[in-house]
Amino acid sequence: MIFLDGVGIGKEDYQFNPFFKYGFKTFTEIFGKIPSSKSRRFKGKNVFLFPTDARLGVKGFPQSGTGQTAIFTGVNVSKMIGKHFGPYPYSTTIPILEKKNILRAYLDRNQKVCFANAYPQIFFDYQKKGRGRLSCTSLCCRLSGLRLNRLTDLKRGKALTAEITNERWIKKLNYDLPEITPERAAKRLLNIANKNKFTLYEFYLTDHMGHGREEKDFNKLLKNLDDFLYSIITKMDMNSMTLVICSDHGNLEDLSVKTHTLNPSLTIIAGLKAEKLSKTIKILTDIKPAIMKYCK
Image (cartoon, rainbow, N blue to C red):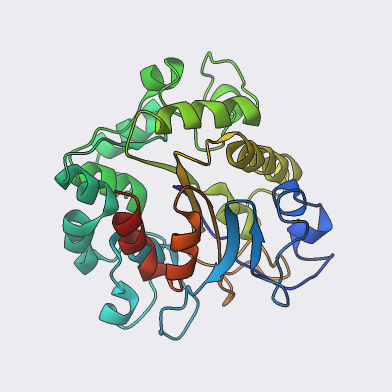
């Protein structure tokens, strides 16, 4: 699973929808078109693109904490608490994350799992000092008894940085690392996935881009993501692997505002169980149970 934070299916808008404004070959070369509110369900060879309801029957803009919990647990916690909440998990829903998250579900089957993101030392320093809250992904990992990847895992090719290429670790954190291409990062993630029953990778900068926090690096980040996703889909073994690309809410697809949107979230499924999953998933809470049913 590749989780993209804040990517919905929006209008065909060449001014404010970056997928139309800048182009996105993952859409144009694999499906022949870019998804929009008028055309949002495509089928390729063993690959399907479709909208997923992120509103969960609750008024207001969907948020990351409740949306991600819905994806990873299959529980509609937005309806449970009566609102959307984020960016971090709502306090009373943390026990649900602990008991029902998808990583734990596979571990309970005695199957190998991996959360492929690596974290820099500053993250662990903040946690040690009691500063900084954990996101749904890192919390799922911790609550399932899994260690989070560090620099050593990154150097051994067993993990990826959150921005794919190592660039920010090098330039902002002064780590002595090679900068890698999105294509090489994609190959690394596929190698990791081949060693596990379930592998999760998170790219959260899409949400930051939608909120206007990444204006300087916007074009580069979007292109890196595009090259990464395109390489994953075109290089994976469609006969032995299932890929789920999903998001928690809309945001990036409409740069006319710096808030989340009411648009359905983007979902792409490719590979072995793609058709069955694409027919099953309608809402965020369908994602985990569908994966657990068909990807045994």
